[in-house]
Image (tube, rainbow, N blue to C red; front, top):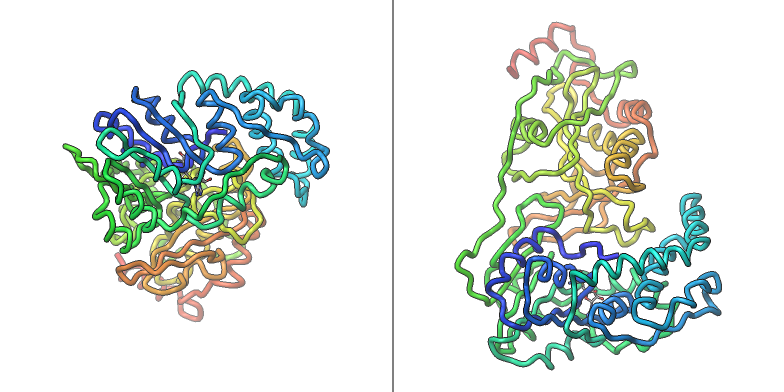
Length: 472
Ligand SMILES: C[S@@+](CC[C@H](N)C(=O)[O-])C[C@H]1O[C@@H](n2cnc3c(N)ncnc32)[C@H](O)[C@@H]1O
């Protein structure tokens, strides 16, 4: 509950805007109330209204605004949720019951052992979970109070908001059409309520046109800026750093003294890793290993071995990959995953974002990049990340920017699930892989079988030494 949908980078900028916001702010598409929370937590004292059309946001929103809506359990289709019924009625109970149902229904398919176990555990504890959630809601309410909440189509709501400088509209519309419908499909079936009629809100240029047509201040955020959008609203006032897990562009007509992009500061720290050289052989007897390293160390490795074209940003979980103790490459992971493979049935909270994967260069072995990727999805890596994140992980995604419609490095190891042609002609490619299906030992064997080509095969040993000398 209340996990940020609006990325931390965007929340930071919104917080900086607080002193420039008028006395009334209206959020269109409240989602998880991250904007509302950011405003209140950073001292905004004006009025805030929310608006959304999903059951989940509507019960939370009406609770935070001190109102209520009628919600009835669909006990015919979902008899196993009966224990929620006693909580329904008051707005706190409605919000708690719906939030617990959402949490529980994620496992309802029970198509693997984990989901079966989680589902049964949730069903057994529905009542206790509601009590715990009621407590969390009360804590939240101490920080976030809304002056009003509208269970209403965002288009209609925009039309109702008074024009003029006293009222600002803030919106982060959905990135994909139908994305939230899929996310909440089971939940919406589990309850009867008066869902408002609504129109698609994912055409960012169209929304911008509607919002900017009204006279008054506005802020619009998106993960997918388009030329059409920028024709409507101009240049972004802020961008997240390139290479962030999520790229956010923010647009606004609110004048700011300090229009700024979020700048990147990269600390680096040197460590004396001995890198893999051309005379080091990788074969079945080699030992692959993964070593947790600090961010500055990772940044140092990236600065030395990474492409100069790729801009750098930090990621919290950094690992050196070694073979027989020699540095082979680097992996950096971030917990926050936004591009989600829509075609694959994976739990939302079970993903991790692979921010950086790179291999040291080698003239002897050409496909070390694939080996690093295979390490990223190994069982050892998965377990290590699970321990750091304290949650189950089953999949990873990553993004590549390429001049070609497919990235050769990821092909055959990760699966592409989206491709967007950017205005500069490059492709933005999102790739997905399940985690933990092979141990490091199996990874090495498979890489040798499928990808290893050794340019010194058949050459006398001295030649491989020459290769090394020539590089240094
Ligand atoms: C990207 S989320 C917004 C994130 C949100 N501002 C937050 O702080 O978490 C988009 C939201 O828009 C809502 N939405 C989709 N279509 C809508 C419509 N026609 N009117 C109002 N809200 C809509 C979705 O239910 C979703 O909660």
